[in-house]
Length: 210
Length: 340
Ligand SMILES: Nc1ncnc2c1ncn2[C@@H]1O[C@H](COP(=O)(O)OP(=O)(O)O)[C@@H](O)[C@H]1O
Ligand SMILES: [Mg+2]
Image (cartoon, rainbow over all chains, first blue to last red; front, side, top):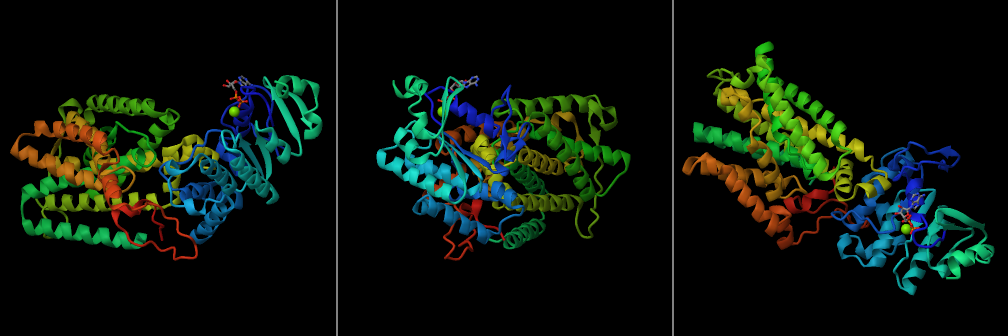
């Protein structure tokens, strides 16, 4: 999903994940209306999100940050608590996937921007979702860092997680997406295959042409 | 350290403390020791909510007094042995904690704290006007000379009960810290929105915290009427309980069970010494000055200072190829040491 700054992308994510309550419309996920479900219940149904501004648990190490969704979201999704051994293995797996293994025992305050984004995605991955909404996971990163994150998201997608990427960086969007939605002033102005959508005159005018 | 080992160590230390108390044969030391232990329970209880989840409760005195007045009520209605009254008082105060949590936990930060302060004021007004438990005039609880355990004076008996409560609260606090619950609490303390996004049911966990915290505070208050012999609302709802219960964990360190213990022993003893050498009037002044000093110099308390100088990285994660058993059980490493 793309859209100019302030077009309501993060607000939409917050409505989907239950952080904000929307006044009209319905949110359906896997055929079910999510109305009235708290954010943690939505995560437990498989709808995970990462935050645009990373929100790590500051007093927990990187590894323990991953532990939280394993103890709660993943345990609930599997219908049983994970054993300590299982948890350490899974933490190692997630850190490996996020290329954060050598940061395991660091605290979030010691992480670089890109590692902070990876931690954010790692926590979402540990929640074992079917849908992951990544809200501007690459904003402010360098080109090579953006490529890192895109590769990472593609790998997540290959494990069977649907990814909604909210992004400004068109190169990343075009490389990653199979479907592109354009939001302008809270209104969807285009929706379809990326190559077609970017040629849409209204999209060019509202967003790309600037 | 495994939970069972921790329980063993705490029990042994408690037994040693009790043996020392019996050997010293000093009523003054027993009284002073009782007060310090009472603060260990209150500080540990406060920390389960305030330190672990980050919700600052100004109403410690309300829970303490509810425990004390539950005892007074039971004493008049159907006298029970002190340990049973402790359990009942814990249940009543736990229920109060649950109720307070249910009504106030949607409030954040300062608003929650103000609500707990209001709770203390409301409850004190209720007790002042409740004549059955003595109203504003207070109530006398006659203390029998000998306790129910052969060979122990009544005051030694009460000391033993408070010692057991202190041990129990420490064991509970540490067990929570190392458990799934402890990680949920830490997530709430750090970022509630992120906690929810990671599947943590924040409201339910906060209710668990207010209930456990309130229950222990109430239990600490239950033997108080028997210990002091006379209780009135102004002393049971006294400011020192609220102030000490906050200051002790802050000075000791709020992220681990050891912090409130260290803070309570240190500040509690200091206040006992000040009471006999200067005057009890300076007690809160000492607490206040120390608190200000620590907030400025060492915001993570004594445990935080320890961690900084001895550099223990308090994380439990080890690559799974290595042993998952924790290396040692020192205070500094404990917060997220894997539990048994
Ligand atoms: N559907 C909406 N209804 C009301 N206000 C909205 C709506 N969508 C967005 N806004 C407002 O617009 C501002 C910017 O939205 P945001 O979601 O942060 O934009 P983006 O993430 O696309 O940059 C928000 O502060 C919000 O108050
Ligand atoms: Mg945004």
